[in-house]
Figure 1 (cartoon, protein in one colour):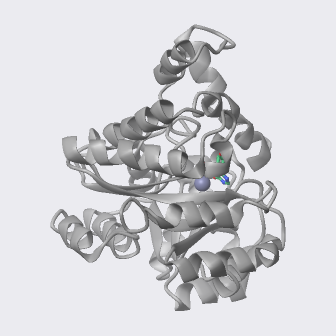
Figure 2 (figure 1 turned 120 degrees about the horizontal axis):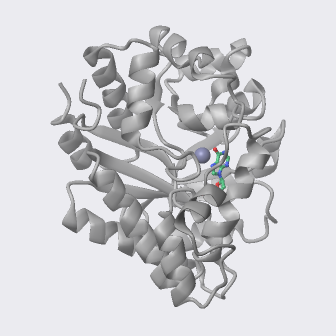
Figure 3 (figure 1 turned 90 degrees about the vertical axis):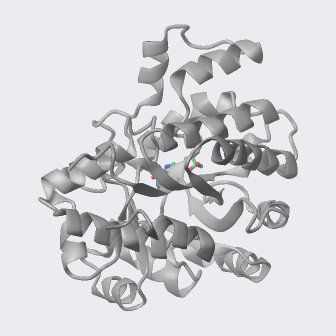
Length: 331
Ligand SMILES: O=c1[nH]cnc2c1ncn2[C@H]1C[C@H](O)[C@@H](CO)O1
Ligand SMILES: [Zn+2]
């Protein structure tokens, strides 16, 4: 299989984890910021999480540097354009990018400016390349909750015009969903779709809670439904799609190595899985690499690949028209 030429869909990609190292240097100069180094390979090494991370929390420390240059409208718009450009150039046909608006308040931007800037960058890329996209607004579980509804309100202006869904991200502790029930409910009432990071560092019960308490239609990672029969059955029976990110899962120690990743076992058993990058820079990856790794490690056929592609289309938060467009690329 020619992995580069295959049509691909990425439903789980973080904006701040997918910044080009050169862009960090350019924006730091424009914004008069001092960098730890001017050398691009050193900047890259500060952004890429090592395979020897202890856990998710260590992985999450790699976002500080990119976030430092993501505090202006121009910076956000450029980075958004570039992530769609990079994906389009490797035949990603549809990309859902997520980010945490609350992480971009350091210079006094409003939520409208923050969300408006990334949507503008995405639309510019959609005009130039054969790619379609949408944004997901992530709330960081460890941050104060007092402004969550403000984020939801600000994003509502862009709903189905660049923004489609609500997510919870960041460090994962057991039972976190209980604290977020009113916020997820508010987002759903406003018209957001819901995907939640769960079962990555935390247990399978978090996945069960995300679906049953928060209304998640998709789950970020969801690895730990393995070993939790109730969560496994719920995900399978309710056709909740898992957004699997193989390279990231190894770095964060969600799995020991690729061969022990449950992705193929899930797929063979009818649990809906998708293949995604998580963070193009922090995980030092592309969709081409993620697809190659999964297909080669688990000896998937072309038919298997396109079955997964179709799950991605069906469970994307794209409009029906975009879904029809994406199905044209399927075999
Ligand atoms: O894989 C992840 N799990 C949980 N949180 C994550 C992951 N990748 C990135 N994040 C966090 C760090 C980013 O700053 C934030 C918003 O994109 O989301
Ligand atoms: Zn993620």
